[in-house]
Length: 506
Image 1 (cartoon, helix red, strand yellow):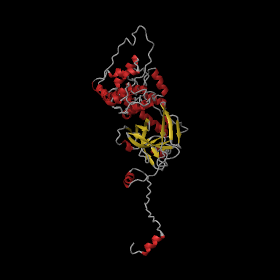
Image 2 (tube, rainbow, N blue to C red):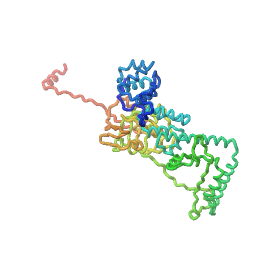
Image 3 (tube, rainbow, N blue to C red):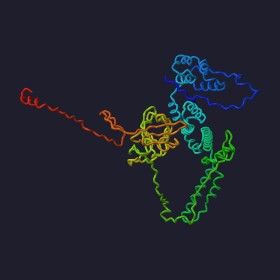
Image 4 (cartoon, helix red, strand yellow):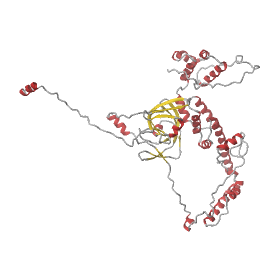
């Protein structure tokens, strides 16, 4: 078994509290008796947290922590400590390491992968409890990464709204998720009540507004001035459209902060309280009205057919240097680990996004987000489209991180890390001559060593067959014949004379 190298802050560590000055009228810490819980087995994280709090409260010296903790082990936990105590450091952290290995999954990557794949299936409160439980067992993630994981796992109907508010902390994101969850529940109940009755006034108003808009547009098409203005439409429609409000108005960040400070509802002008429902909805109609002098004259054919000529705008394309020369001055190749398997990673400063090959996700249960495909133009000139987006954890040598990847069947490598990942690293020192990259993450220095040269090697026929079956757009193979040259040694003249003389014998 491996030993714990004495981390300063293990992930079961309870953060230190800053207590106010002690009141002489209250009992001292020595006079207060706190119960020291026993541990017999099961998930040890909760017990380790309690013990850390006990040690901090009574200011137990480090050399006495092990003796106090082992006296409170019972049943299976006591047996495991007695059996394996000589294989771990005789310290409190050594005991904690043993308990985590025996009664819990001590592989941090497993917890990190589960946290990245987690998605909301029940309520926001249930999702928050599950997320909190996993995050306590997945150290190494910064608060920004935890926030990204939490937002990515929310249900689609509330995830977009929460992201639009740009929460700066995980707690703020949880509050917003609960608010939008209440809004969605209120809208579902409102839709049920509307479907059971007959909202005559709302339907009549909607038909009137459509007829009015149609009449105004037909008059404008005949060259007559339109008397329908945005203010008139809003005054006619808004008073009777409370039941049709969908709450889709987006607040700016400043408006959101101001309403939150005043404890005001995000969707109406009333104060927000538990169980609050917005009473009045609103429908805002915005119509772009062109001045009469600026309106182009329509021909009869255009007026009848209503033909419109739209300028075709080319879709944006992402440039990617795959299938070009990998060892360029702005790329670096290295090996990484994904799902406990070694993968070929290309760090490309010319790529704006991150990409992952779909073959890596076949045996990996990840939540794939179905988004609008992006067009990617490779260095070879080929044009490809992405097939969704996924958030996964990956390890590059000693650095573990979580990032968003577009799914793309790229050739020549399995993972591409672009500018979207490089921006999260801050200041980077990069030597392209030695292919060495250095940066600081959470005050820890990391060094990534890339591959400097790609050397050709001789392979067998079986290996060549496997290579040709892989998904490659181009393969360069050089077959060289193997020839042997028989070098004859020079024969002494006297021996040569004897051989010629007795040629029948030899």
